[in-house]
Each structure stands twice: as structure tokens, then as C-alpha cells.
Image (tube, rainbow, N blue to C red; front, top):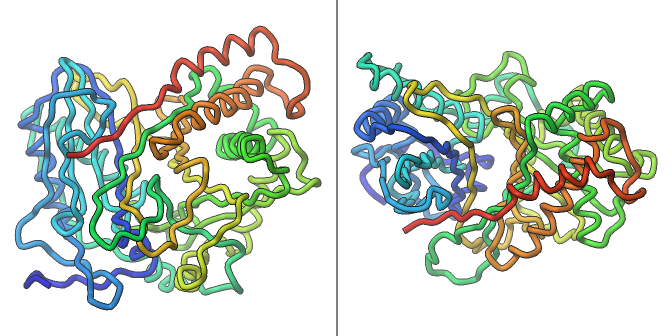
Length: 446
């Protein structure tokens, strides 16, 4: 233990990500003039404004972790030349030094800029708000404007925020839900370093995404429901299981689901989870499944069941690891807003990465599909799958099936029975358009 000031022990909702050192990256692909000096100054300003980013974790000697202030802000910017698809080239990632880093990978006039945050101290909504603030500060500095940011305190745990709002436990959790990454269980007591995942991706065009949104409005569901339904149909086919043997679980942002609402960076992981088990009554088409997922979420939020799920994490993590072959987990980041950047810089894409070290406890649930992240950026739906290297061929098949399910419905604009007939010529052409964007990309760290 160092002489650094202890902020507090990690709460259960935060500690579940500490043993495997789970990190999440948020990456913009940009083209044009990137001012590295201004970017470094903007990152320094953000870290000064938000000291949680420069804090670090240390074991407490009892199997848990403490959050500590660092004597000097250790969060750093790294710059490397290489393939921007290798998002973490040159990054130095260590929760014992800092809980955030910023990495730039350049290739001529293009670059990937990736903010990495430790999942113990920030979920996607929190981190994306910080990422937007970083780019706004960068833009001000490039334009020779002051880049001063207000000072923030340390964000609080979802447990504390929920208790303040009168949220209490309701019964027992309906289904185990554990954090997961591309890493696998490993009994090695030594620190093996990060297992770097590959990423497969299914990305729709703006036209296809707009068609799905229109379909959702017409059928009283959401784009999350439709994407989730496509994932369920895909997993049933790949795993050789009937839909009724699958159990779907996904995270839900609780910030606007409680009263008073919680600010974007007020908490660390302000997440609950929702569950859905397909039944014959739900139907077997994408639209029927999507409507069932949306209806189940509305019901869970209406009763308060979803809001109280984080309070069950101690019981879930104390139990035996789940082994059900039909569990499907996803995370939806929703609509990722385009940040403010100078005119000379053009944003061409948004990517994600999630990685962790091998799980020594055996408690992190793994699934054949890898880590699935759903998001919409620039009006295009994207489903990214972060997975181990050896499952690359399987992921190509998974992405082709996802593309088939989504493109059939975005093209037709109406439900179709799974496996009923062959797609039209128009749909076949859209399949090809989607497949051209599904080649796996790599994350790397040195």
C-alpha cells in the first residue's frame, strides 16, 4: 500500500470490474489536421477537472480494492504511428497507475483517437460525456480560446445514488448478470497482461438504419429491441438452440429512470439490467421478438424491478458462476453524439473496444458471441463483437447472420418469418453492402 490518500473502497457495482481490470475504449477516427499539442493540453485539463481519471486502484488485502488519489496525475497521452484500426497501439494500461488514458494512432492524414477508462469508475454514458468534453476543450484551444473546465468531485456509486432516492431491493434477481469481456478464465496467479480482442462488426447504412427506426415506430418497439431481436435469432441459429432456451440480459442506463435524475458523470456505473426470455407467445419473427423485449423493459421499469437490480450484485457475485449455454448478454450505448471539433478535422467513424485480463476468480460469465456492444453513430446502427482471436471465423458467420436478419427487415419494412423464403434481389444487394464493413479489426497494446 502506498501513502496515497484513500478516497473510498469500491462498491460492489464497481468492484466487479477490478479483479480482471476491465477497460473500455471510445474511439473516433478522424481525418485532417490533428494538433497533438492542443490535444495533450485538453486531456490535461480534463484530468485536472475530473481527478477520478488520474486516480488508481490498489488491493485492500481482503480480496477487494481501494480507490486512491494519485500524488500526481498519471493519466497520459500516447502517440504511435501505425494502423488506426489497432486502437491501443502504444498504450500503457495499468489500474495501479491511472484509471484513464488517451491514445492516438496515426497513419498519414488519418488517426484514431481513443479514450480508455476503467469500468470500475465510469460506464459508457459517463465516459462518452467526458470524451465529448475533451473534444470541446480541444476545439477551444485550437481556436485560441481558454480551455478552462469546472472542477468536479469524485463520482459516487450507483448503490449510494439509489439509496438516496429510496430505491430498495425487490425479491431476488431474476437471472445472473455478470460483467464480461473478451478474456477467458485463467488459473495463472501471475499477472498475465491484457488479452487483446479482435473486433467483428455489423454496420448498417443510414438508409437501413432509418428504415429500422421507422419500423420500430410503426410496431411500437425501438431500434434496441430490433437489434436485440436480430441478435437472439442469430444466437439461436449459431448455438443450435430453440429461441425458448435463450435468456437475454442487457444493461439499462438508470439516470433518467429514477427521481431526481442522476447527472451523466455524477455516478460511476449507473446501470441496471433487464432480462427477457423468449416464449412461444412472444413469436419467432424479428418484430415480434423486438416488441416482446420492449414490452418487458417497460414492465420492469414500471414496477421498479430494473431500477433495483444493481443492489443484488453482492448476492450474484457470491453465488456459483452461471453455466447456462443460452445466456446472451449485450450492452447498448444508444445514440453516440458527434462531438464538437474544428473545421479542419473531419470525423469519419466511431469505434469501441473492451478488454480485460483473464479472470482468476472464475466468476466472469463468458459467451460464445464475445462482448456485444450496440450503438448508433452518424445515424448508422453498429453492432461490434469483441472476441478472442481463435473465434474469428465464427464471428464472420455471426456477422453475416446479423446482417441478414437486419437487412431483410430494413429493406422490407415489415416482419417476415425466420427462414421463410429467400430474400429479394434488393435485400441481397443490401447484404453485400453490409458484409463489406464486417471485416474484423484489431486492438493492440504495448
